[in-house]
Length: 302
Image (cartoon, rainbow, N blue to C red):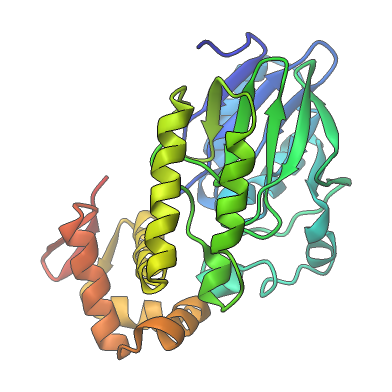
């Protein structure tokens, strides 16, 4: 299935979320802005596609750093209006980096402002099309997905990927998340969707297969929550590695121990010493082909 002519998808690497650009007759808009370190690249991609037009609107599906890290740079460059999930408004006004998860995960996000909010049930006009904002808790309690019934397109953020979904972060802190993931998947299953644009990875059309994979994965995590915790530790280390590209092995332990979310996850689920946790996480990334060890350094592999 082809995208409508007024839409562009910039598929990014796993450090940054995909960006979806809308070239409407009266308004241009971008959904999600990627990670901070890629903000200049995001501006270049958007500017090239706009061909001299302004960027009028920026929308965030949720406020994890890989989805909103480019906000401030885009705002400075284009003076665009910005809409964020309504439940996050007070955290952004106060710039509470603990509540926004940036300190807990050790990730960067330059402070940004916003002009308005979106909530479940709202309808947005993006690219001359009407999009329904739907609640998609699980990966993030306040995440939204955007659905266009007319074109049968779903912007799924991290609620549904072709091969799964994002880390179930609430469970790591002892908050409910698995049931919310399942409810979100059931919501998506009830929509008439022909094309999914995920937060990471290429757009896909085999929605039934993706949902089957996702339901199987949430079954796997619910059967033993330690599996979600282990996955989270691997993802957090991989994110650090993506940002740095290589990490001296002696630095892996202090890097992990400096992340509050790693400390809480380990305390609640894994009960390893920090040294054991670092050794385990490195071995897991190497086994998965996501990293290699050379010259006493952990090296990124794509």
